Length: 365
Length: 244
Ligand SMILES: Nc1ncnc2c1ncn2[C@@H]1O[C@H](COP(=O)(O)OP(=O)(O)OP(=O)(O)O)[C@@H](O)[C@H]1O
Ligand SMILES: [Mg+2]
Image 1 (cartoon, each protein chain N blue to C red):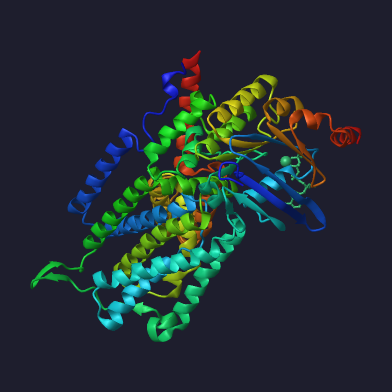
Image 2 (tube, rainbow over the protein chains, first blue to last red; image 1 turned 120 degrees about the vertical axis):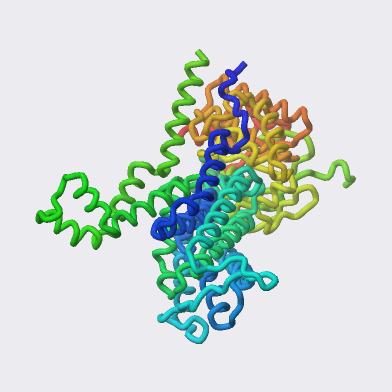
């Protein structure tokens, strides 16, 4: 008899610990705005939720499916522009505007997938970048709809009114906080479902070996398309939320290449092909970029007595650290990728797997 | 021809050209249900290329493949698999970062949408190839002998009618090869049809009902195992290879 320890009792679901931790985290996050009123803290959390949503969405096709799209800005932009254009120039309430936005993202994903999924590896990556650039150029040049490079400045998000009573008004960040939280939780749950589904198995098979997958009865393009459509759907939703939250979009901030890159990094840093990888990645990247952007690090060094604020080093850091943030950010990201090729969560999982394997090998003797 | 002796697989004048190289030229033969056909030939004879043509990995340059009465021209490997014909890879292709059982689950999912059901099928097939004790190991970490077994378990899980095995004994030690031989005979007992590429003549003689010999892309000979070993042309082809 093989030792019992080697038999997996749960089938690719979450561990009891993950489920409890997840529920606890959601409850705490739901209570957060009741206790923390600092708008900066709330703003950071909304940024975090948006990163989680996009990271989780990308993870479906990029992490599980191994199709490294560096063009998800296209879907983000579709979501943001559709909702904001409809609201600002046509007066369509965002909840209605969201429907065509999501439908458009699904349609575009289906078409883009059908064309680009014939390509493999670096060719697919390049094609995905090209597609997003096309959308950026459309946003830039279709001035009558998008207002071109000047972008769209929202004059406000109308309150939700039911039967004459105002249910929600968007004068504070808190409603966005809850929408972000809800959508982030939804994308995590979708990922849990995905991972245990036929679709999830097929995408992972495709990631590991397309020819083998194909020979085992998997129609490659069809399944990649389905995963891309789900991915695009949530990315567009995040784009819509972003546009409404910030109240301003232009081609660079809504369809720029750096959005695509940011999305990919979130998943890679956290750990691709895992449920919580993008959550970890989002937390790290948002914290990192905020710490570098502000003077938080210099302030910390000063507070810790390591550097005097009036010394030349202190002045130098204050002057330059926040400007160099993209450089340091890129450097740190490169370090993580070099030393943890499976991402932070992947590294943790690998260590746990080795420990289990050792325990199992020890038990067998 | 009556319904019962119509062949399960009929290969008609299949040619495959790679630029100036004729990897297969005008190969024809057929298989009846339940048989084991041994496909042999020196290195580079075009055996794997024939598998690729038959399963739709790439289309033959010329010729037709008819499986269960259906012409496969233009079909992709996934469609061919759904029809009931599936192949293993000479150079094994484990889904490295998936567990052993998940590799087999992927195969089983072609017949069911239910993952739990696919896991049941996968578990059975792992028992059949005697790999159940490795179910939760990562496929990428298996030694070659077990990778070959995994290839077989995975294709069995697709519930095929015709199995194409490409050197599943290649690189195995005698004990492991014997396991595979027993496995192939067991699969035959269950009524599946198999085409087996193998270099080990003793093994192929033992398991095959019929043998087709390829040489430089052409069919050199076809017949019962005893006819093949006494065929002077076949002997020359093999000796010729041994001398180069
Ligand atoms: N994709 C390809 N492009 C070009 N030439 C190829 C390709 N695939 C195979 N060949 C060539 O076709 C010939 C037949 O190759 P094939 O792999 O079918 O032989 P084989 O009988 O399976 O040999 P082995 O016993 O070594 O596996 C060889 O000369 C090989 O180099
Ligand atoms: Mg071969």
